[in-house]
Image 1 (cartoon, rainbow, N blue to C red):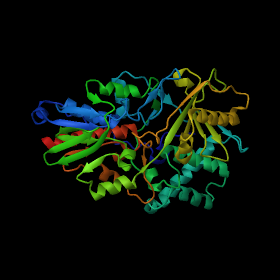
Image 2 (cartoon, helix red, strand yellow):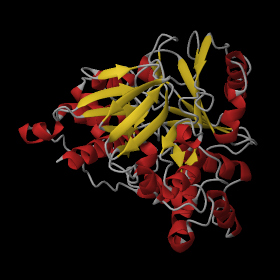
Image 3 (tube, helix red, strand yellow):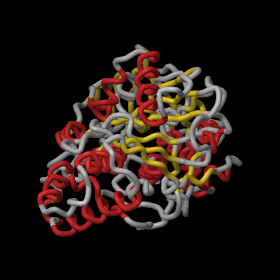
Image 4 (cartoon, one colour):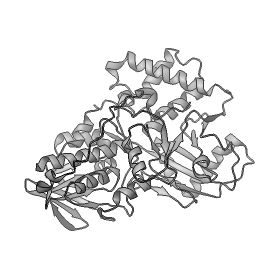
Amino acid sequence: MLTSRRSFLTGVLSPLFSLPLLKGASSAPSAAGRKVLVIGAGIAGLAAAKTLTDNGFSVTVLEAGSWIGGRLRTDRSLGAPLDLGASWIHGTWSNPITKLAQRFSQPLFEWDYENEEVFDLTGSDGRSVERFEVFSDALDSFMEEHETSLLRMSAADAVEKIRQQRALSDLTDAEVGFLAHILLEQEFAVSTSDLSLAGLDEGTAFGGPDAVLPDGYDKIAEGLSAGLTILTKAVVDRIEHSSKGVSVTVSGEVLDADFAICAVPLGVLKAGSIAFSPRLPDAKRHAIDALGMGLLDKIYLSFPEPFWDETVHNFGRISETPNAFAFWPNLLPVTGKPILCALNAGAFALELEELSEEGRRRAAFEALQTMFGRDIPPPAASVSSTWQQDQRTLGSYSFLPVGVEPRARQALAADLNGRVFFAGEATASDYPATVHGAWLSGQRAAHDVIAHVR
């Protein structure tokens, strides 16, 4: 049972809030003539720009890439919309992304994690649902018993201690490795040895099923960008601020404004790609260094015709190398095309990024052959994400490393002198590593700017 993202730990905890658009004449006088530069045209930057524009500010969005949406990136080279970055709306009930999909007339396809078929290459057949339940229940119980030490313990340590307690005695080593990879490493985009146990319990979740967008997640970004001033291929390398305003350097050109919102990925901040003057405060620099940037990549394979059960949503692969090609969403029910997707995380995903597209396609196909047999037809084409290699992202999304306090996200979100504000999923304490978290963080940063001028 491939449960909804993090729901096996957080349950259906939903504060069900959404920052409203403060739209109206009362904000117009203070906003009139005020200029804001938003760095990054991902969902956080678009949320900030849209909110500020609706409240009378003059906003320019600076995007380093050639496309709008950031990690909302959809590829159509295989004849169907395939999301290279974010794919799922995690918890559709009262989720602001669900509302955006409705606003832009985008259909949703409900994803059924329990509709799965697991191939156990180690010889243990069946029991797939029971295996997931045994693992998640044991982990939940362990976290409750060790609530005071979650920060100091890695997820890998927890799994090992649970095994020593024989709470997982009914599972083979391969099964435990598979479940740890599917439920932890793929969810948080990092090895369990680097993931804090506290990271599993971080934030809250919206209720309801998960869903994907058949026409592509980039349709959300496309809808939000309408009416906004967005400059692409605008690489920001310096942000200066004072009590009088901000100056942002873009490829040698200096742009002045009253405020700036920095909505770039955590990986870009960690790399020091943007210089700040004055230097960032110690608390913010520590937060940038301390928080982790994970990696989750996808390989889409297109086939002449399906050789798998067309109705199954998820295929699993249990092997002696649990971190390799373990999870395969079936895109045929969504797109009508015979397309499978391999998700890989952490160190193995990084290894795959070092290969060519042909090399990744070959490796993925060989894994499929161990599941469906050597006689299956080879893929006609493939397309992959390489988020670590992309200098505009340098990773997929953030995670909480061992020993790092969740409040590091608040330090990352803190403004600079009431002039430079920060947004992005890594700053979203309530919903980190999610699209809706990024969206809400952009709204929050915009409202902070609005509050400052009132």
